[in-house]
Image 1 (cartoon, one colour):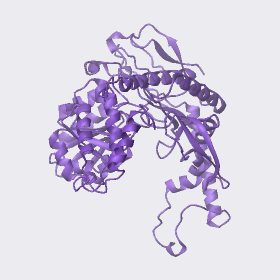
Image 2: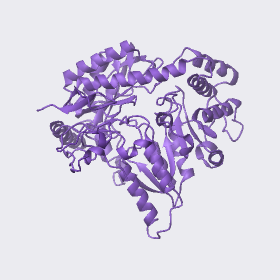
Image 3: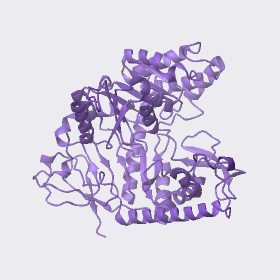
Image 4: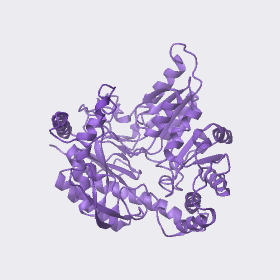
Length: 569
C-alpha cells in the first residue's frame, strides 16, 4: 500500500537498501521530510541513517512531520557483539560442565535428585542465559528505592560477596540520584501537592482497600466518577477501569476475540498483548513493526483466503498496536492504520500505556497527537501507572463495548476493586491535565515534557550516540549492543549519581542491548544538561558513540534544517 520514498526515488531509479545482515528490515536511507516531487532526485544509494516520514501519497493523513530514525548497526560493532556473546556462551557451557561435576557451586534452581528422570523444568536457553550472562550484570536491576520516584530519588546501597547471586544491604542510603528510568512522564509521582493531598483525604474517608469486586459490593462512587472522567478525557462514550495494567490487556483481549477470529499483531507489541492474544484462542499473524505494506498484505490475504482449510470468512479481524513502543521509542503510524482498518473493515485495538498523557498538545495520547477522531479507534486501552502516577488501566470506546466487557471480562468480574487513594490520584491528576482544577499546571507539564524530549534526543544525536525512535517520543533508547557494556554503563552512571535502565535479552533482540531513558516534565533544564554531560563522559569511557553520521546545514528541508551524512571511515 505504501512505499518508502527513499527506496524509490523521484527519478524512477530503483535504489536498493543498504544491508549488513543485522536487521535488514530496518536498514535504509535518509527519508526526506519533503514529499518525493519536492526533493532533488537521487541517483545513488548512500548508507545513511534511516529517517522515516509519512510517504508522499499519504501526506493528507498527517498534519505534522512524522520522523523516526533507526540507524543501522555498524558492521564492526555487530561482529564484536556476536563474538562477545559467543565467548560468554562458551564459558557458560564450561561453567555448566564444572557445576555438573560439582567443581563449581550452582546457586540457581534445579531439579531434585529423585526427579532426574522427569522432563526437566529448568533446562532451556533462557535459564542458561540467566545462570551465565544475566547474573554477571544483575546488580544493575532491582535496586531498592526508599523515596518517591520523582526527578530525583533515594536508593538503598547493597553489596554482593558471591558475584551477584545474593545481596546484602550496607545500611547506607544514596541520596538525590537523578531518575532517568521511571515512567513518570508528567511528574505526578510525588508526595506533595494536590494529588497527594486528595489521596490522603480519600484514604481517611474510604480506607485503603475495598475487599470486594466491582460486581459485588466493591463499587464506590469514586470509581463511577473516575470512569466518567476517563471517557470525557478520551472523547468517547464510556470507559471502565481495572486494577492492573498488564491484566487490562491479557484478560480483555480474550473477551473480545476467540476461535474463528484473526488477530494481526505488531511484532514489537508488549508481552501483555501477546499473552492476551494467545489466551483468546484466535489465530495470530504478526506484521513487521510499523510496516503498513506488511499489515495490508496480511489483511488482503485474510479477506481473500479466509480461515485455514475451511476458507470461511473470519468472524472478526482485530488489529493490535501500541501508541508508543516502550523498547523502540517509536510511535504507531495511526492515520495509516485507521485508513487500512476502514478499508478492510477490521477492528482496531490501541494500547496507549506509554502515550496517554505523554503525547498530543492536550496530553490525550497518540490520537490527539495526530489530530484524529477517537471514534475511529474501536478499543482504546491505556494505563494509569505512567503519566498519572497511579496504578491500573482502562478500556474505553462505545457504550455497548464497555457494557459487554463488564459482564464478560475476567479482569472485571473476578478482580478486586481499585484502591480508593489510587482512584483519587487518577481523578486529581487527570483533572489537572484537563484544566478542570482551575490551573494550567497540567498543560504546562505536557508542554514541558515535549520540550525536554526534543532537547534530550537532539543533544544525544549530536554527541554521536545511536538513538532509536520518534523525535517526539519521551522513551529514548540508546544503543549499547555489546553484553559487557550493559552492566558497565549502568554501573558507571550510578557512580555519578544517575539512575538509568539498561535492557538486554529477552526484552530486546540478543544483539540490540540498550539503555532506555524516560524523560519527565519534572526534569529541569539543568538536570538534563548535567545528565547529558555525564552520558557523554561515560560514552567516551566505554566507546559508545557508534553513530557514523554528522549533522550538516541544508536548505532543502522545510521542517528540519539538519540532515545526516556518513563520516568516511
